[in-house]
Length: 403
Image (tube, rainbow, N blue to C red; front, side, top):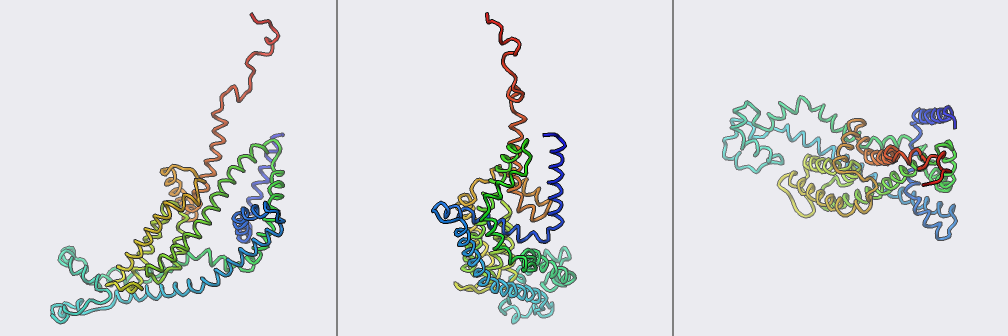
């Protein structure tokens, strides 16, 4: 094929990508339908092998999936909303308690034996810690009481801290909020899933015809390899994260945190970040539970909220370690075969370039790059005689008699 035809095909591909970027606001239901279809396709193939007509199999599986997903949303969304509201109220109360003045904060009352004999309040663990290091703090002219710490460091930035906390949760729930704002378009998602699953084979065969014949074989082979990486990774990750978030919600509820559902959803979302997601989720759960101020659990009471937070953190760490060791390797498998050092570099690079979404997509994109580089290396490292296919005996000497 002439070079100008290849150039024309590349220009068409680039123009198509540009058009998709321009209309990205309406792509959510189509992208969601593609992910769901990718997840449900093995079930459809299994039913077709049992001699069930493909349209019937697709209809039953699609209907069952969306009935289950809808029931799950109806059951969990109100609880998640209530727990988020409780968390917001608890954090506000924590800030108010930090600003609350006690007798221990007053220099003229602190010496009184009656005051010293009083049991510590809900923030007593902070007061005791400051009391132990009071001489050292006085040497460096640092605040020695909880109220002084609040007035010097927290009060001037109280609004900023509140905005940061609110921005964190708003950012976490941004995708859900964006999906809710497109509720009309999302109503078409079941129809799109049905149409994709019914015509999956036709879509594959037709899409291959769009590639120029001169590069079709090599391009289709490379795209199939990349597609296999994405399919295995996406199917494994979606299944793994759904099960992981469910188990974490149960474990956190048993551990006694009153914010089990939103924290489990957060842990599931952060689990998309390889290697680092578990640590980020664990520290977030520790801080949120500790700052929430809850000291009561079904199995007993704690002297302060940080005792409960530490218990919840240990339970979360144990469950996550067991999940990483025994479940994830079997569910996700080795769809993206990368050295741990390369994995860390890939994750940090994705975060540096595109933030949190870049860290989440770093693994499958790195797998696609690895497959592409492997195919290119086969060409560049091929022996020269295989590359040029030169005959072992020159043609002009083939008819000559051998000595």
